[in-house]
Length: 173
Length: 417
Image (tube, rainbow over all chains, first blue to last red; front, side, top):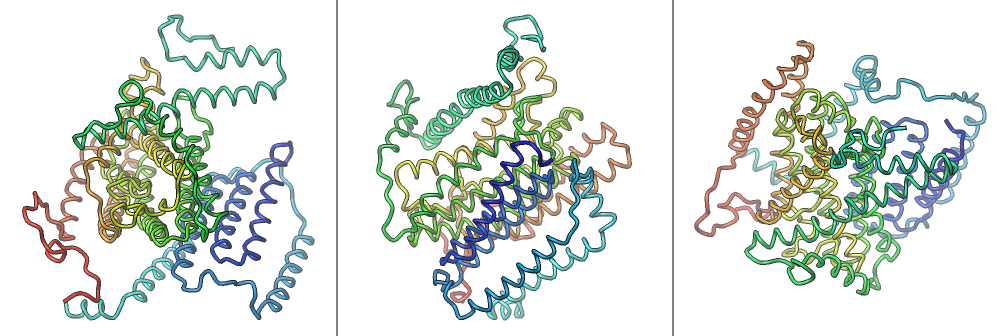
C-alpha cells in the first residue's frame, strides 16, 4: 500500500501537518488557537486512516472528532471566562515536561520493541458492512454498554444543568 | 477503444462525455501516461467549471436567486447590467474584488485571513462524491454518504473562526449561534439520513441511485418525512434565510460577517450558494433518484436530469427564503430538539420495521409501493399528532398583535410571573 510516489508523499505531508499541528496545540498561548490546531491534528489523523484504506474510520474520525467534539470544545472555550489568557506560563511547566518525557520514553520503547508486521493489501473486513456486522454480533455487548453509558451521561447532563427555578416549576405542575 | 458515439445519430447527445475520452485515448498513444493523466484532470476541471459550476454559481445562484426573490417580493430584482441584468453577478464580482478588505486592528489577523479560505475548500470537495451520471462521479468511494456528512461539518469551524477572530461583539454572537445551531440540527439530520440508509441498505451515493433505479421508486416516496426534516435541518445548517439566525440583520448586524468586506465577504456569500447547490445535489442523489427518471435516462443524458432536479431543489431553497419570516434563536432550538428529533426517531423506527418485514419477504418488489403508501399516510399523521402533543395549534392569519406570552413564546426564567 505504501509503495509508489503518491502514497509516500501523502504520508510525509500528513505526518508533517499532524506533528506541526500537535506541536501547535502545546505551544500556542491562545486557547482558541490550540483548539484550532487540535482540529487540524484530527484531520491529519483522518488522512492517515485514508492512506491505510480504512475509509469508514476516516470519515467517522472527521464526523465525530471534527464535526462534533471539536465544535463542542469550541463552545466550551467560548463559555470559559478567562479563555484568552496565556496558558503557557504556569508553575506546572516543570512537572508537565517531566511527565511528557516519561510518556515519550514509554511510547518510544513500545514502538521500538514491537515486531511490526507489514502487509501488502488492506484487510478485507474493513468495509462499513463488515464493521457493522461485527459491532452487532461479536461486539454487541460492549456496543450496547457504550450506548447505555452515553444515555446515562445525557440524562445526567440534563439533570445537572436544570436551574432551581425550573425544578420548582415542574414540582408545582 | 470505445466508439466515438454509441449511436451513430449526430443529434444523440447522451454520449457527449465520449468526446473527451476519444481525445484522451488518442493522446494516450503518443504521449507518456503522466501528461495524459494531468491533461484529463485539466479537461475535466475546465469542462465541469464551464458547464456546471460557473452557470450554477453565477446565473442560477446569484442572478436567479435575486431575480426570483425580487418576483416574490413584488419588485424587479437586478435588470440593468447586460440583457435582463444577466451580467449583474459579474459586475458584483468586479466590484467586490476592487473593494478594500478591511481588518480591525484588534482582530486576530491570521485566523481572520484563513477563515474565508477554509470556508471555500469543503464546498468544492463536496462535489467529489456526487454522481452526475452513470459513471460520472469523481471518487466513487463506498462510504460517500459519510464523506459528504464529514466534509459538510467543516465549514462550521470556518464560520466560527470568522466570527471569533473579528473581535466584535456581534460577530461573536453570530459565531456562538451558528455553533449551537449546528449542535442542535446535526442530530435530526443524521437520523433522517439513517432512515434512507436503512431503507436502501447502502451508504454509497451511487448505490442509492442504483437502488432507486432497481425498484423504480425514489426514496422520497418511501421516506417523505425524512426529506422534509432533512430539508429543514440543512437550511438551518446552511444559514438560509428562514433560519439564518447566525447573520440575522435585524438582530446582530450581520453576525459572523460583520467585520468582513470586499472579496473576503464575497467568498462567504458566494460559497453559501455553493453549499446550497451541493446540498441540493445531495438531496437529489439520496432522495430523488439522482440521474434516473423512471426510464427517461435512456433518452436524455443523465447529467441533464441530475442538474434539472438539483435546480428544482435549489428553487425550493429560494422559495422558502423568499416567503418565510425569520425565526428566533430559541424557537429554532426548541423546534430541533422537541419536534424534529422525536420525529426522526419515529421515522427510523418505522423504516427499520419495514426493512425487517421486507427482508422476511425476500425483498419483494411490490412491497416497496405498499411501504410508500403506508409511510406517506403515517408521516402526515405523525406530524399532526406530534404537533398537537407539543401544543402547536394550526394558526390562520393572526389578526391582532399579541404579547410574547400569549403567543406561546419563550420568556426567560427570571422574568416569568
